[in-house]
Length: 129
Image (cartoon, rainbow, N blue to C red; front, side, top):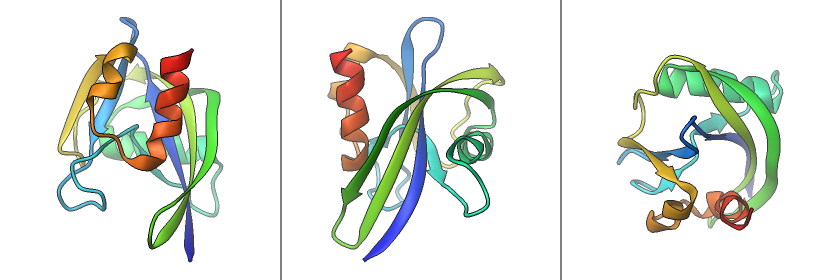
């Protein structure tokens, strides 16, 4: 089975709200929610990939913080190694260039969304902190 390494950002603003991104209709797992990020290229570290992906997808710059998760999730056709980090925006405002929608929610509001399965372990860590 194909394996892909991806990285996600748990971006928390000054009001302690978390940025949630809704996958577009053309993505796999359409319209499910995720922590924004993307694939790690062979030539980059996870944090380098995260900075690049957030710039491409959200048009803002982030500072990568603490590692939250490094998990494997097996879907029917692919194994995803998802690495998530805390992050904060250092310049720009997030714009949904590739996602259907972006919303800021408090941690206790996060379970209201229909999350992509690979993101649920990160979600559980945030809720149980």
